[in-house]
Length: 177
Image 1 (spheres, rainbow, N blue to C red):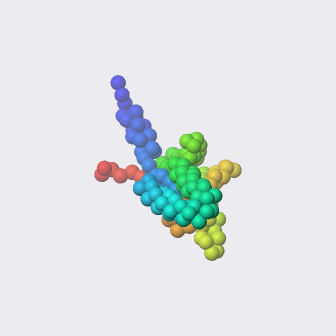
Image 2: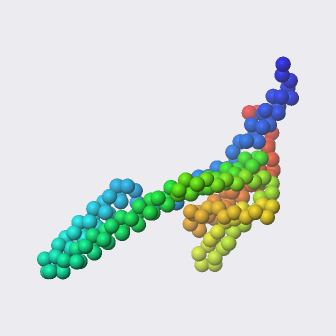
Image 3: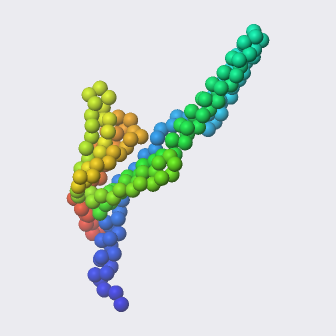
């Protein structure tokens, strides 16, 4: 047999877990897989043709160096694509602020804060804009939004501040819905 108090308690728990703010941040990569293949094909053809020209002139070691250049560029792109697998998820509910960081190797680190005790801080460069954003709570400080540029950090800062203020105001009661 259930009482009305149990139903109210469940509704208040559901309302506390409603997401006020949610962001999934990933590094920006302007080159997709097709673009990568096109760039590598172009570099390979140019290097091979230029290397053949040097081979015809008798400078045969140059052909190997052109091949080495293509290999180093391929390795650099692969490292860049591997780094793009990193992400950062920030979720604000009425009862918690959760930061979940996934490294490019798949390692997961998660922090949970009470949104009532969190302060958002930033480092600003006069020429560049916002350089770093920090969440500070009870002596713990973590850097967030490392993937974003200065303008994106400003927009993210504004949205996160609004979400933290909404969490600090608490749940709103709307009898119509």
